[in-house]
Length: 125
Image 1 (cartoon, rainbow, N blue to C red):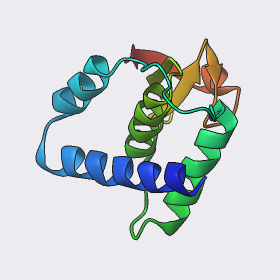
Image 2: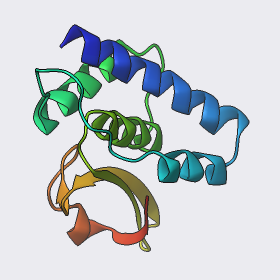
Image 3: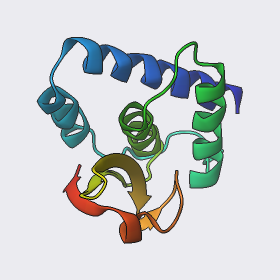
């Protein structure tokens, strides 16, 4: 679990850098290029364990973690552990709000399960 938390923390740092010094297109291509790996270790972490590790990494992160940063890092973490995750970006018009979350096989894994009822999906990557 400690390794997953450390890995999560590093992904948060990585995507903070991408969001600060690169474009949204760069973040998008970062995720598009990352495919789900075949897990190498004997202990296969579950989706719930990895999402919990990301939650803990966010608690210890020195800055407020935005949903886009957290979702990109979570999607990459899950893919690195062999889970085919998608980051989803959605928006609603009145009042205007946008949000990002992660899905595995069409199920929301790092947020409330009813995100589709609140937000119109704009992009999946």
